[in-house]
Image (cartoon, rainbow, N blue to C red; front, side, top):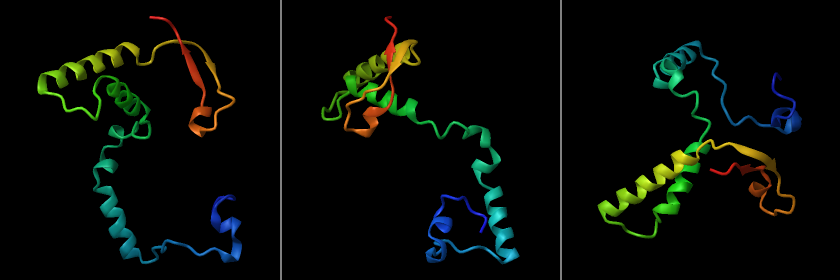
Length: 122
């Protein structure tokens, strides 16, 4: 069938029912290709090569929460001050060197089983 050995079409055999409709009409295929070739992502792929890595954005947002609590409504000056402190803290610590990596071996939470880094003192 031409699919990967772990895919449902291989695993389920004759019981497998495709959830997508294969395009067989050459006109429809050309229309789809023309549409895809007009998209911004297709025309400028260099702008999207890092789109899979969101850990920096997520990490920054977690750092911001230290200074700007979601449950508090700050005035404009206080908000900007706190946001700028978060940015300074983030810039100081992003990609900080580390001395070692370790794994938590008693964690129930699967995310906690990811390796941790022992950071170098500032």
